[in-house]
Amino acid sequence: MELIFIKNRDDKYFNEAWNLYLDSFPQIERRTLEEHFEVLEDENFKMLCYVKDEVLISIVCFWTISSYTFLEHFAINKNLRGQAYGSKILQKFIDENKNIVLEIEPIIDEITQKRLNFYAKFGFVVNEHEHFQIPFRQKAEELKLLLLSQNILSKEEYEEFYKALKKSLKRF
Image 1 (cartoon, rainbow, N blue to C red):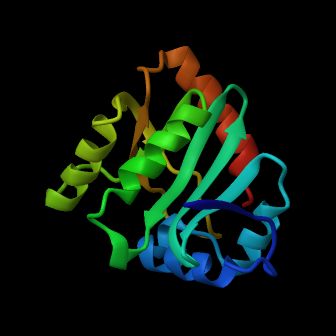
Image 2 (cartoon, helix red, strand yellow):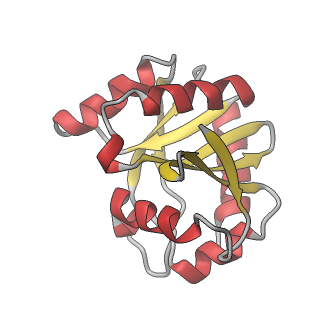
């Protein structure tokens, strides 16, 4: 697998990566195209693509915020799911980053339970702090999510993280 950093709209895999992003996340959990171009310019934001034989396998979007790595979006090409790419890529991401924090939807069905189980397999735990996603769009509804991390965050750690997250992500 080849790792490619997406830095702007002219990068070879940007359009495929953008389509995977659109297909993998509901509107409330993603930015508009123009807003995404803005965050690509932020030095704390990275968009990675994993490619094999010129086929896009995965996108990984993350922020370096304070002492944390916030895994904002992680998606596998729907035609390649079930082939262990997600596990391989997430393990590589864990090996290369520290203090990883991510959000998932509350557990309401089999799909959301499988998502939680996937991350738990890698040592992620649910934090009990009430957590709301920083809005990605103007007039977006508040979205309550579960916050997962590699270690339980104390109330103080959570507040420090959320304050830094809000400062980095807040566009509206």
